[in-house]
Amino acid sequence: MGIKKYQDRIIYQVYPKSFKDANGDGIGDLRGVISKLDYLKDLGINTLWLNPIFVSPQVDNGYDVSNYYALDEKMGTLRDFDELVKNAHKLGIDVILDFVVNHTSDQHPWFKDALANPDSLYRDYYIWQKGRHDALPNNWGSFFGGSVWEKDPQDEDSYYFHLFDKRMPDLNWRNPEVRRSMIDIAKFWIDHGVDGFRLDAFIHIAKADFAQNMPSHGKKGPQVAEMFFANLPLVQTYLHEFIHNLREYKADLFILGEAASADIDLAVDYTDPKKELCDTVVTFRYFENDQSKLNPALPAFGQPLPLRIDIFKDTMVSWQKRLQGISYPTLYLNNHDLPRILTKVAKNSAHKKAAAKMLATLMYLQRGLACVYYGEEIGMEAAVLDKIEDFEDQQATAFYHEALKAGLAKEEALKMLSESHKMASRTPMQWNHAEYYGFSATKPWKYGKENGVNVADEQADPSSILNYYRQVLHLKQKPLFIEGNFVLEDTSDDLYVYTRMLNDSIAYIICNLCDKTVKYQVKGSLSDKHIVLQNGNLSLDEDNVLTLAPFSSLVFMTE
Ligand code: NOJ
Image 1: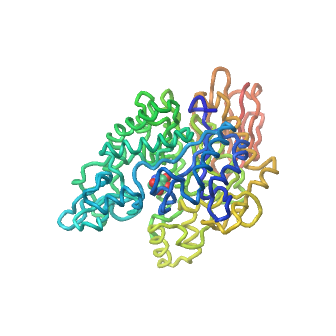
Image 2: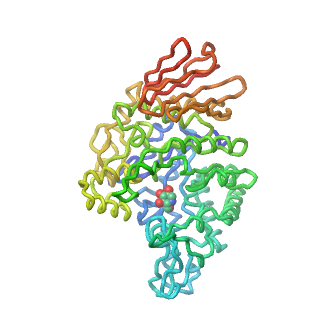
Image 3: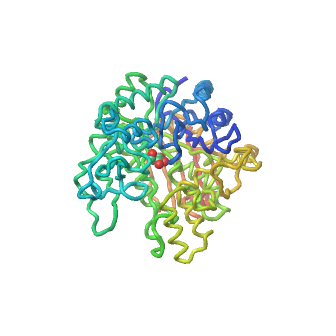
């Protein structure tokens, strides 16, 4: 059973390595996911997005694929996958796969052959350049640190291009054979029942002229050169060909594009149905850090910073309003590339529960596709990782050494990293009180000090975050919260207040974003409205002034 309209989707993101380990090797797997489908159904989701599950050396936790046609053996078998899809479909849950289109692993047979043999048919599957007078082809920097160029070990004069780790060479989308191969792979998985794809890093599949250096303005070393490798016009040409072919094969295929740096203008382009590209895109621009709070004695990378609420509001409202009549934005609070937001927003443990509920109210009742990251529905936070190796990141290691040199204790440096680094949001799902939280019988592949919340406790507690999420996601299924018009009220940055309106129904959503008590003058009469969700202490006086305790929220509506 498929979802009729993409805007009805309520997505749950599973990081498969960390969701549920069924075979006891400390790494989550597909049988583990199968065993939790009823839990997901009960939560109220209808679409399951799995982070990469293909064969991979795991340099980047599966985003380095060495065989797109088979599952990583730690994940399970193709038969397990088919069973997962079948069982999910029985419950009315669609399955979407993370499809890595920009690069492969250096262990992929295409790359191995391209390296081994200059005349290989696969040489042109990748991007090669000659060095300039024994120097790198240009000064462009990789997202994972260092240059985007790595020497071809077989040919001292040549370099290959990698936007991420050097063990993840970029594919050459100029080559029609590459484009054809990617379509073939997608069709294979459609044949296995998948309902859509999350397109990883698709905004990078076209690159500009390599002769142009990035202006460095006096800074040393390679420079991240997004203007030359992100969102170029050719991306849309390649993407259209790809999607058009796939939609001819499966008309209602759902496409969620990862467009990390896309602004709203690009989001309009990428999701305008006339262009036949993505249904929706995820931007990372909702969540900007307050750089003014940086400690100048430490490197910027690795410092936990508060959110810029002003930017968050401006960005949210523009994505809400500009996409109206075009597409539906993706609504999310967390993902595997970000530190968990609850740790950032609420510092005082007494506020955590209210803050988790408030954030869900604020985000998911807006216009768009809710996308819940595993564990946020129980209030999981950034785990504190206690070894620098756990971050698997050269930039994190550099921060750590600088921090120690600057006089920080190891624990302090690791805590800072844990609060700011993506790796601390990828720890095991906390199912119950057992050792390793019921995730596995063995020590998990990634493990840190967690905040102790768990599913079993929250299932038994009517006032839990989990039960509140169920209510929010239940409301989200109403036409008012899918199609209703969105209007953000102009309030102080301590508050986030909006209405959703459809025909005669109207909902008011009032959220206190801060750790102080805030007052809000409710507009109009409340006599014809009723409260549908209440979180935290709130009181209303006879003049309709609402007093909201820290991080509390309220939803009331007519109807
Ligand atoms: C975006 C993914 O979300 C991230 O985790 C990954 O490292 C890069 N793309 C490279 O595939």
